[in-house]
Image (cartoon, rainbow, N blue to C red; front, side, top):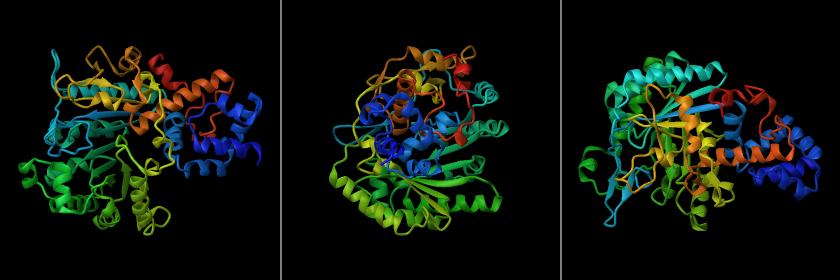
Length: 443
């Protein structure tokens, strides 16, 4: 086995390993390792192997956020939610099984963001674009975005004016309103959460012990809404890519195959299937998900069923690094250099665990307030004062960002050349000096 192959195999199985450890494992000098990294970096075959490996989520994220210098602004605009999903960080399951929903609370001096506030945020985004940074916005929430459709509309219109890619994440329930569907079709992408074909499972999993919400919302209604949204898109000629997001769990292992087939029948463009990352998984769990995904793969060709893409994230595979319970702590600035959450009252934070609404004051939350004197640049810089975050609190994306940021720091200290990242082909670098974002925020 040649040197390049040895290093590639090590990186494929443990992508977060630094240069020093790789050099020690394979008895390499820094010069030899730089040579191997460059060989992997410039080889189409090696890059393809990384992007189709079990740890593909890691390599895809590094390409986008460290190669193309992508930055994501996530607006949490929801003020309420009809759902009570047990896996949602906004939901607390009490001792009697009741699911309690937290809501964003206005603190002293806070006010709900107005149109002029979003104009200022997008002015900051424009400055980032001028530095060569690719910015995307996501409209999501600890709560349902369409409980505040006016704000959703503001963000989409401002994003469109600045050619900023936009994605909406929604449970889809409130899209039965034609006005909300009209707003939705102003986005570049829209993803609806749905993971069952059973009316009973839909009621139990998404609503719990909330009879009023169960009575006013049914799976049949949501399926009808998805079909209507696709029809509206096709009739209007809108370019919105419509997809579904499915979280795998005990309640739907047996019907995942049918969920995918139904999604194809609805006419959506893609379905993404992922696990509840924070749930402990055993061999039985992985056995069940492997059976389900094998059944799904039997319907796909080149990752598609017809024209619909089927996205199976690597976190469902038992040997993925995401299931290895890595120990460590994250620098908040590493996250702030790649993403920022903004809640309805202008509280900003770089990680999802601090972005969601909390029950009273029982949960830690570190944020910085957005105001007329504090733009995105200052917000990012202020995260240097935030405490370290344990890896166990990070979602998969955030864990990848943290691990890769640390890996790159260690590699530079060891003597790896700055432009010698084995995961980033020269064709995937939008800014060769990779310093544009740091120059924007003085970090």
